[in-house]
Image (cartoon, rainbow, N blue to C red; front, top):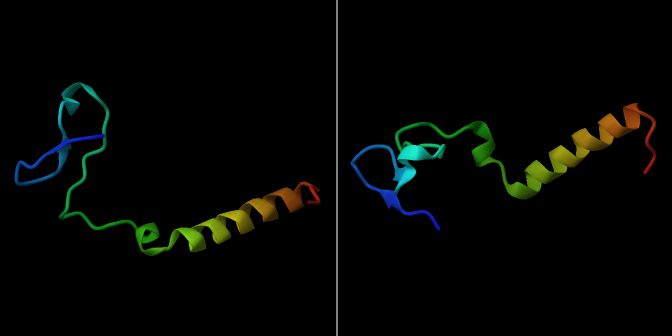
Length: 60
């Protein structure tokens, strides 16, 4: 479990000064993938993997 400090800006994990945690800024725009459902992402990912495997002769 992570605890976050609310310092009026980016959220910083408590005790994270010596750790490589990402910093989340509520003012920053989310990447386009964030609007995609997990099911949609999984189907697209599976299609990409299946296409790559088919290119290499895998039949499954």
